[in-house]
Image 1 (cartoon, rainbow, N blue to C red):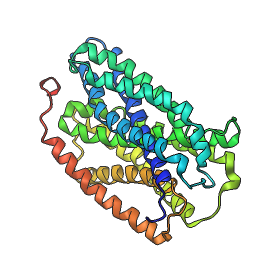
Image 2 (cartoon, rainbow, N blue to C red):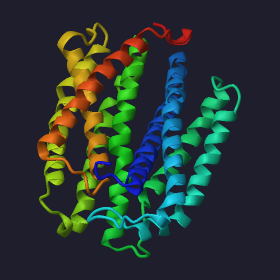
Image 3 (tube, rainbow, N blue to C red):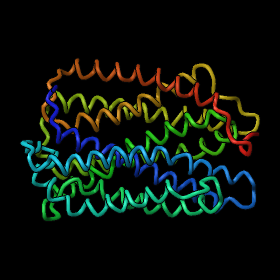
Image 4 (cartoon, rainbow, N blue to C red):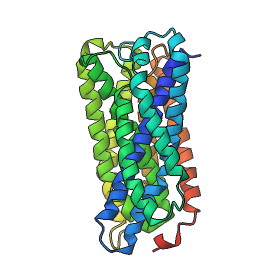
Length: 336
């Protein structure tokens, strides 16, 4: 349907799922680590609380990535798809299984241990989860770096690696960023702890985009001015403009709102924050999705119309989730 083959869809879902899990592990580790350098302030426990709250996003990513990988194990040998200019061929995907299967085994086993441990609100669990997140980031990074195996470390193999692991720093991190923004609506003290890390996350997304562009230079001869490629460059242009706004005036407005005597983000700034967040998430998911399929039959206007439609739906969904999160009572210790 719509030129989408099963193998392509499973590869896309695996990349998106592990990117989410890897980004959740990365930023969960960073928040958890901040508690170690926070001193004796009782408010430092909020960093651990945020780190634990990122776990559902990690579990969703692991679930999507694992189910997709099992689907690939069951179907890829019989698939007719032979790859496109940028994506690996079926034999190359199959050749990566001996590398990826042990990594997925470690990922699944560690995840089962994490969700089975008791007293998840206790100090021991908060300390343990730091090492868990750090180890799982390394595992997810390795998985995304081997979407396929050519048998040698040539330029194409390095492209596969760069085109894979950048997803943790781009699409995965913007999903985490948006998740944290929505979660921060629970209490002002959460905004103070979460907003402070937004510039760092934005910088990592920029680095992720740079990794992707640099890896593409390894196979520059494979690029053709197709409708799909032109549309993707349009989305990248929108991402750059949106990213400058997010990491510039909007970030300054959000940071100033949590300073002493700062004013809460309201009105037009609030609306623009929702729009910018939705644009960022939808754009990165769009790039990851469109890049995963060879034979999508859409014209440029159809691509763009679907893209705008999804953004509108995302803005509405974003506002709804923010409203629901605001109504959720935070734990007693994070009240002002």
